[in-house]
Length: 239
Image 1 (cartoon, rainbow, N blue to C red):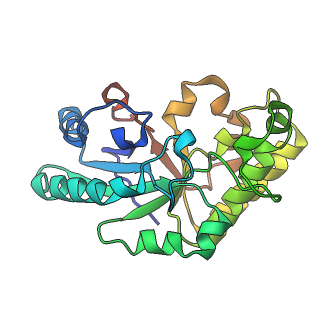
Image 2 (cartoon, one colour):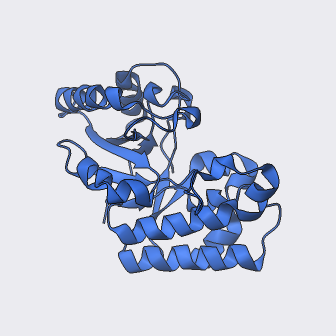
C-alpha cells in the first residue's frame, strides 16, 4: 500500500495537462518547501497512445519523456531537502489494458505509482462517455464510471483511487443506484487494499464531494488526502 506522509503534498498536476497553471515544475517544489512539506507527489494526467483525448486535456505522448526527465532531475537535485515522487493519474480502459499499456507505464523507469482517476469511461457500443447527450450523462455516467473504477481496481495496476465520489457529480440527490455503486467500489478497494482519495479540490466544488459516499466507506477504509493541485495557490499542507 502507498504511504503518504503527514507532511506530504499529494496529487499535483503540471502545465502539460493543459488545464493547469503554466509554471515550471520546480515552482511547486519550492512552494512545498516553503510550506514545510517533506514530500511532494506529482501525478499528472497520463498520455494515451495516439493522443485520443486531446479534447479532455491530457499530456501528449511526445511530452511524456520530458515529464520524466525533468522530474527525475528535480528529484535528484532536491534529494536532501524533500522527497519528490513521480506518478501518473489515469483512467482505466479495457482496450488499453489489452494493449499492455498500463503495464508499460508501470515498467517505465522512474514511475512510482499509477493513480486511478476515472473521468470518462468506454461505452459498450464504442466511443466514450463524454459522447453521450446530457440526459444520458445524468442517468448513466456514474454507472459507467463506477464499473470502470471497479475493473481498474481489480486490474492490479493502481495504488490509489482518486476522487471516487466525483462520479456522482451530475446527480442532484442520493438514491439506491448510487449507493449500490458506492458499496461495490468501497468493497473492491478494501479487498485490493487500495486507499481511496478524499479530494480537497472536490470539497470546494459543491457536488463533486459526496458525504453519502464517505459515510458508507466508514473508518475501516484506507484514506489518502489529495490536493488535486493545478496551480500554485492550490498547494498547501492538510492539517
